[in-house]
Length: 187
Image 1 (tube, helix red, strand yellow):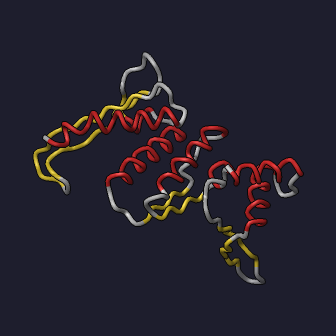
Image 2 (image 1 turned 120 degrees about the vertical axis):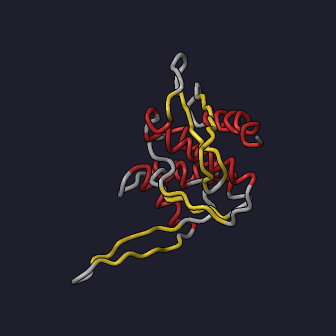
Image 3 (image 1 turned 30 degrees about the vertical axis):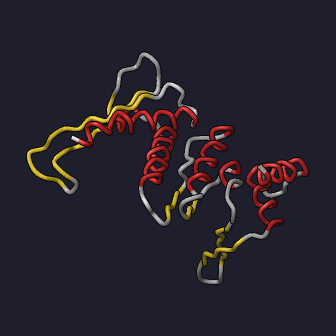
């Protein structure tokens, strides 16, 4: 009964977050169906129904959401859960798939907000998301004579700027890419 009461409020919260992530007409419905047997978390089966556009009927989330929409829905759900759980840490592996530009900045901001109450590790290729982090690490590969090794290095301030600039403009960063990287890191 509590789940049934909470479902519309949870859906509304997720919809609000999705609007900030660029899905301005997002509608989410959480249906709970009784099952014959008890499952791990009760006797209900949860189904997420979704519509991203006006005038389009709800459909099962896994059938209608694009990869970018799924990434943003996952982030919205995890951001909501982070408010009500005491998880010490969370890892996002390219949670920003399928987004760019201002929406990527919003993704980064949500992750930054989550980091106020927990340790967040975010793996990303988007400079707008990476720039929101307090600390940056670069994962790299080195080819040996007979093998390849993977390493990780914490970046200092100048290396952070160089890495964000490379994400913006490629290996040979221009002055404008470096200036943009500095600007992203200071915002």
